[in-house]
Image (cartoon, helix red, strand yellow):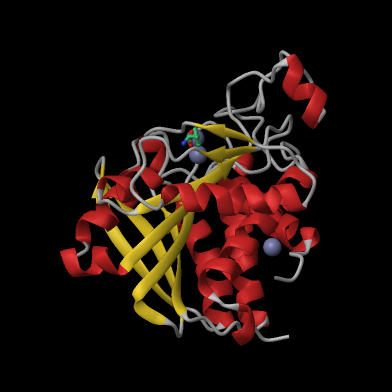
Length: 289
Ligand code: PHE
Ligand code: ZN
Ligand code: ZN
Ligand code: ZN
């Protein structure tokens, strides 16, 4: 795949920061900043030629929104999905959590469109609502599918916090995940190996939106640069940054703004998304230049 331009990913983060600032400082479920975030991402995808759908649900007395974007083409009986949550907590703008995953996914999708990628498998993206209230949006969307629709989805890759300011390079472990997940772990590890970045596997358990897919028996994977956990001395040796400090000291706090991002980590993880999109959906012989 082409290298994803860091400036474009950053521009999406800047917009999400402005959206929060214009809407009471956050992008949380049930608040105007969330719907404005959906409108921003949807507008970009619609203009690029994606088929978008907004799936609505009700949670805690407010309407929630999931945004689904299908790239036309490919075998829908072999659908590969990529997603992350677009909502944030009420405390702040939610830029590392999860403006980073949302913006990385968006820029990869826009690159797919720019390249007019020809896929053999069907490619679909999802931006989830109300993750911060307990993985609500992704859970409701998976629950809305028929058994046949679930069976069409062969893999789901999740990106929640991929630009932590004191980053770790974690790939979701396949332990306890459905059959096929180990291949997704290896695929993501291979990207980082090729980029000269050491990774560690992490058992994310049920802490993000892949959980609903895993419960439906769908193979899952993903990457993560760390939240409230602290970087060890050994990790600081191989990754740089600050030992004994949180990967994201602003996790779920008001200081999770546009400056709370490590651009190198965000860029590497976004290129990992692109590597997975291209490798899983588009055999080399069919790729456009
Ligand atoms: N889902 C957590 C949050 O949004 C963050 C997280 C992501 C934790 C991935 C572990 C693994 O707050
Ligand atoms: Zn969070
Ligand atoms: Zn998150
Ligand atoms: Zn690659």
